[in-house]
Length: 212
Image (cartoon, rainbow, N blue to C red; front, side, top):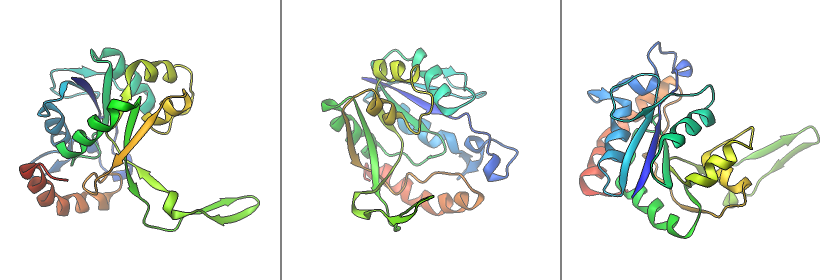
């Protein structure tokens, strides 16, 4: 069994909404309910701690000023030695993704779902521009699987954190990767809600058939 942290401390400012994005309606229920229900119904997850300023969930922790502070607050409340950390802004989490992370994470300190980058990426510095090899570039998604003890130690030493497994990398931990999922689309800008509406039927179908 592992624990899960569901991070829902965002304000929705980039969505131009007075309502925090995790509470925006989608398909008849708030965004946060999709990922919460996916985590809570998975047989390998023993607890789900929602890190949010408000809400009616059995287990909750206070959000911090930064994402890494929210992770720290949630991790300190967790009972399990291994944690799955997910952003509520990615509502369409499937059991198949969780299964892949749990399996690959058996031989590592952490695990992250990755998707290949579709666009050509340019690195621009004061000295000029260069094209990075696209075959070596991947976009990281959540949820990310982490060793709680290593994560807690790292968060108290590292000032700037980009994602959860980067903490383990800087602590010398072994991080594995699994195939990500295109359904794990992140709600950041107003147009993203329209994209999520289009993806919703595919997500519901995937959950019915335990696919993707």
